[in-house]
Image 1 (cartoon, rainbow, N blue to C red):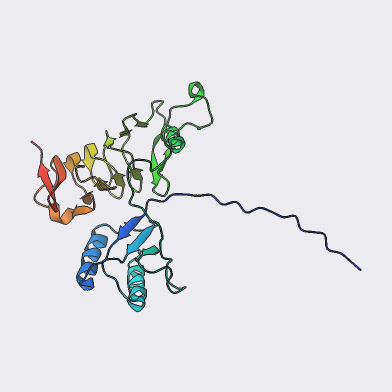
Image 2: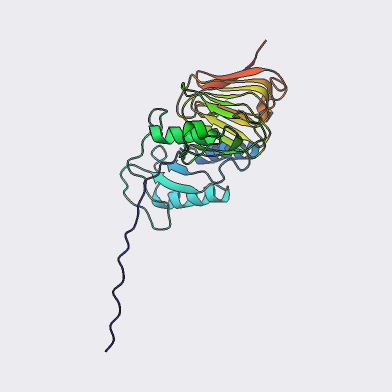
Length: 277
């Protein structure tokens, strides 16, 4: 008779992680809403690629068949729905995204704990968190940001001066140009860019955005619900400007504010882009 050796029990490790997700809220008539969405995607291709997207259906309140159709329609547009918000439902069909329970509106306060904010600053300045302050190297240039946890990755530059610095006030200052394909997500305040912002790049800030060079990429201020946020740039060549979810695209600004110093701000229920003298 043979006996199998007992298997060593291994514990399963669970860790909590917060994500800043975008919420889409379809409205009736749905075809008009989808037309507006197509307009957005046409002006900002790839905008939703890799982003956590939650589908809020509490306004539309469709039946299960309509939900399945809508998820498929959005999928064909390159928008992957991670979860659904729908009051009164605890679960949907297995082929649909899960129903989200206990979601809260994102705010600038408490989005990251103090330790995580310190790590953001360490990464932004290109230094290892475990090193003592006097041993930390201060090199770095703006790298691609991970919107899921607010961390800013930094790649080394030949300059000994930090290219990104987060002030105690929560303002993020970027001293190097932002290259195409890079994304900066700052959930704690304003973003100041001393250089230019290339086409195909993106800045998302909880506060205002100040660009002292040419803005050619996308800029979204007040991303966590700050209607008083503004966007300033020395030369407007932006692909898209947005404040608190209200946006204008490049073609809408053509012939009015293109190539000029501008500020963008909310005026009632519309986004205004006005030139600066």
